[in-house]
Image (cartoon, rainbow, N blue to C red; front, side, top):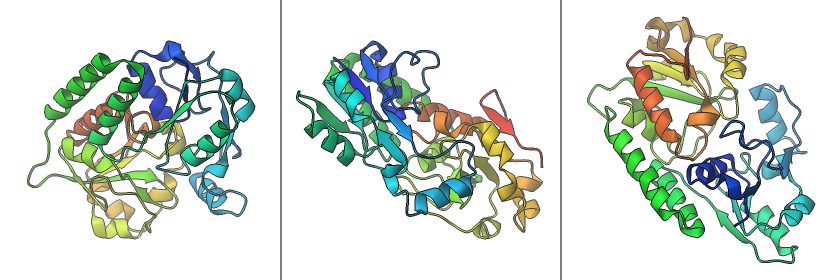
Length: 296
């Protein structure tokens, strides 16, 4: 089977199902597993220049020149040359990847049979369901069952919700402030925290930074969508310069952290379980190579 993934999370799923050898096309953002995708052609590109701040990216998305998935170009000619049997895409977020509608339009122009599947997970259970769905299409059901069993075992081993749980603000975007939505509140709950602003499955929307003072979070975790930890640290003054920042309980108690959002929190793939484990360590005051403690 020849598979094209137009969503980094789908590439994660393909790899975990042991199907990397069947992957013939990917997005320009697919970066996991490290070193295994180098020879697989990218069939997408972005119209955004590199090294933009979160404010500049937000302005570009809102501008007249860019609307939703028009931020991404799909190389239809390369896609057709690859002759995929299966294309994995999404229709959950127009600014995260090429849309299902655009892919379908491209496939209609092709002169061969290709199945397009949209992965629409909004919760952790939904993510595991998408693994099962891809497995059913690729004959890897046994591997998917192991992934689900391992994920559920690891989640069950986490502290889980409790009375008096620390109040956690997960920052999915810096400017404007957007809290982590969809599966992130569940990650926080499994880790033993209480998600602020959003509940499980909820879509994130912009907020004013002024609301943070009223929220008084016990823990603040930064994991902006698409940003490396270094990019996040470079732009952290967007938050730390806000009035009242120094008075937040999280800041006073030294509970401000930076994590790798794209790897463990932003993408609807099985590595969200790793993200929940990372948050559990954060809430316990521990750091490892996957977290950075922000001095306060």
